[in-house]
Image (tube, rainbow, N blue to C red; front, side, top):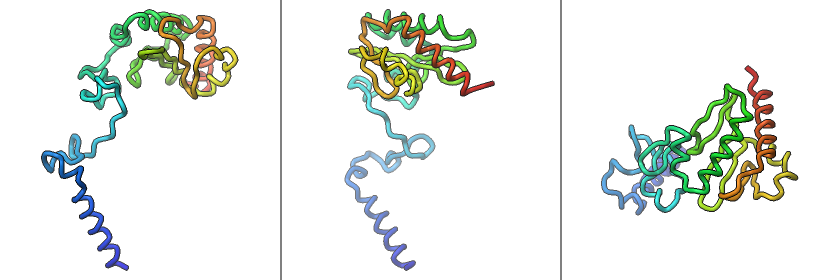
Length: 184
């Protein structure tokens, strides 16, 4: 039995050395090694312009810079998405408690209040609200029937934000959830 274990490990090690994809790399030091000799984490799929310039920082725009504020994010969004997201931002700000903070998380602007609250983002053909809890989308499914929804996403047109009353209801429900969940 010990001989078989030794042989199988030798065979596996030799098979890895002979993989054609590893022989294509320029030098031995580049073989799947990142900083400090640790294997690199796989990168997520990015748009065509961003693939070559992907960064390991989740706040990266993919162009070598890191977003530091929500205003920087919004400045990079073309119209009409920018004005739509500004309306969403203003509505959320009007509802959240004063202790809530705006953050860039997952490369998107969002709010934190006693934990993650919700995020919003612009894409080429739609804008999205990420309420941070899939049950919230399910709870308001009747009011969200005119919008495309997924487990934790509400999509709406780039030029038409969610109705203010509906967005306020979503934010208030999410604030209550966080207050229950993250009692301080």
